Length: 443
Ligand SMILES: Cc1ncc(COP(=O)(O)O)c(C=O)c1O
Image (cartoon, rainbow, N blue to C red; front, side, top):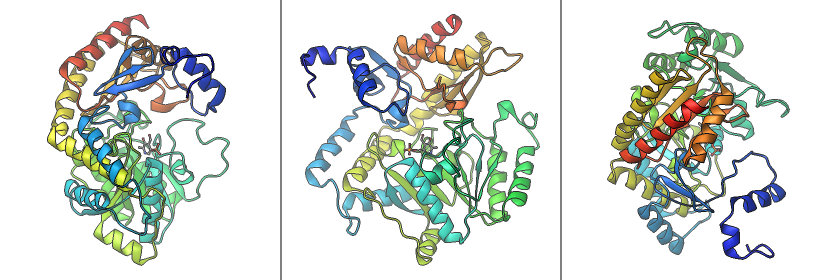
């Protein structure tokens, strides 16, 4: 596009120009920062004025193998020349190979997958699958959870106050149980604890549902709700609660999948396996592709019960070829190990900042899925959303893009998310920590 009276140089050199145009023509359904990005490479991105940033949000948490990875770009170019898409009534080779590859990287009994485009869509499909398999319809999910913005996925979403206001009734048959938010335990317990939250959860399930819902839908580690990592005992007991009521356990790993936490999937840290697993974002490395992965038994019985899923982009050759290339990069470059080692380095640095600065309340996470709470003081532990916004904005000015500081209530309003691409180097971790350390005393 060439705007009137402006040559290309004038256009690309100025963030402000594009921001104004955006405000004029785009419905502002989501507030944005005044940064207009033009290109990226690895962990770094550049705005149209040539300013460089370290991208600690990994795009929208999708660029696990880094921006413009040469092997992924090569595969994109090859596949564009071959075949982008086909009718869902026929097959393509990348789709078959991607489902085979996923069955190799997930633990048994997970074995079969099908594909969609987005996280919300995969959550919707997982719920439809669970309902057809069980013949039931109720679903239990966690307070503070985020599963998307379609009607079904939003019905089980409660990441912020007010997010459900004004949209009319959502799906009936939904129950919410407390999140395992140990830093602010609703039952005033400290670790190791009695898991009172799960005793309460059982009461909620048995008193507010039929007692046998179709499924329990959770993020294994809550992302938008504030980087909340559950204790192992909580996860194991939750799995038991599902088994006792014959509810399927659906784990939504839109954010935590594909190596983000140091394993292919976050649930692998806990020695349990879900009945249905969904993943998206980093699966496609910027190309929208999502997977629903389940057991042979569930896949076959649900289909026998009439389960049918259709969507225009349901495993396009292009989507699946890119996902395959991306998985190959994660394997070849040993990025699961890198997520653990770089994650440990970053976490240690943040913990050092926590000891130095009162306003750093909690540092938590696994691998390169890390969060840091900003509080008023150690004594009160009161969340400090204003300072969180200041921290994120100041870091941005100094060339570090962090997740968080969202006035609408995401990330628990006072959690800063630090999730760089898994290809990050020690030097880049150091640069980011220095910026944060420099900013913390000034906010
Ligand atoms: C855990 C989780 N599930 C689902 C979604 C929705 O994914 P999408 O925005 O691709 O629909 C998100 C998005 O952030 C997410 O974090």
